[in-house]
Length: 46
Image (cartoon, rainbow, N blue to C red; front, side, top):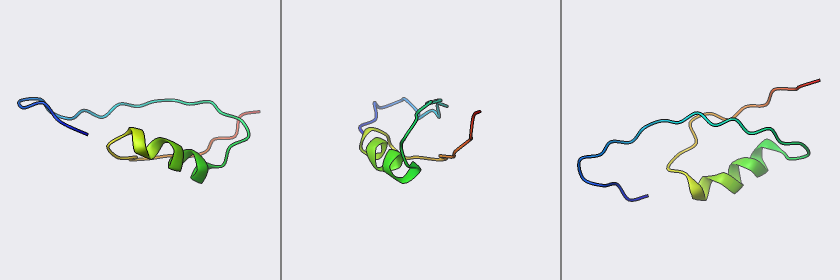
């Protein structure tokens, strides 16, 4: 990812609600679109 001179990276928190996908598959899918994956976790919702 290219950075503009004088700018700084910021961390954003995104919430995805998905069904029927494995965490490792999700990580592989989003890694090309982001600088780094800091945290990815599963929470079961009933």
